[in-house]
Image (cartoon, rainbow, N blue to C red; front, side, top):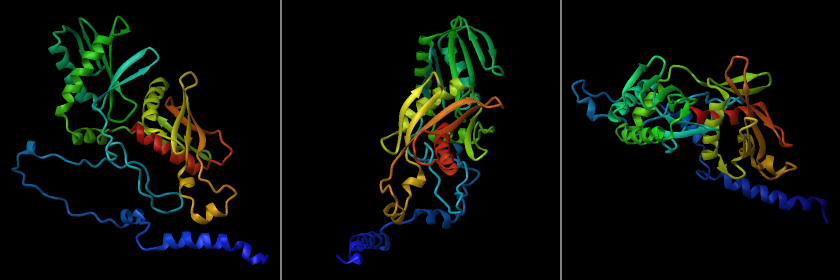
Length: 321
């Protein structure tokens, strides 16, 4: 057999693949649309308008992070939960061990008057009202507020004699859920955008990246467990395999962007022609600054670059903002 002929099937295959990709409009690179987009003139409404009749029908979430990749090419940023249509509930339940609390997706300044209203409607006698300390003590239970792990969120606890008051939490959850029907999605998005302190940030560490959060490890682990179990559900793409509360870590099956975006020639001439996910562990510990630190540990044979690490942590950070 002519040696030159044995390469013909491979050449024909590559030609067919590249020919399909070359057809105009077959694969439209939307990154170009982002790069060439121009800002239009804002709509100006009369000052005499009735303010209560106008609001954002489709709120645009605030963009966070850098949009320019390390290779200098622009990449469209991953949308957050508001843009994906996965609007967060106004109030959500959280737990860690024996601890229970409510996570309200609003600033403490907005939650506090709702809490006071709840105590009045329940006929509770207030013995201490300290918004500066985030403590509202009543004859039946003591409410405490503190900033949530996620930006623009508030944690609310209800205790009696130092123990969790389950009935109080249930009643408060029902009350806040009903109250949320009057809060528009745009208002919640604006509250998160106005968060003054960046509580979730990426930081370069030697030749890799780490995620720092301004919350203790227990609360951070509980929030990450909740978010990862809800969002990392795609097998061979991004899947939560294990949650270890004792060691404060998570094992993920994750396909990095560099693996997903491998070109045709890279795949054909690579020893491994399959696009595969890696096993990566998110490990939590306390940073010298006192913040909770999240690091990525590669538990697979395939190389994990600093850019890959940052991409995964950026994905996780988007769930916590």
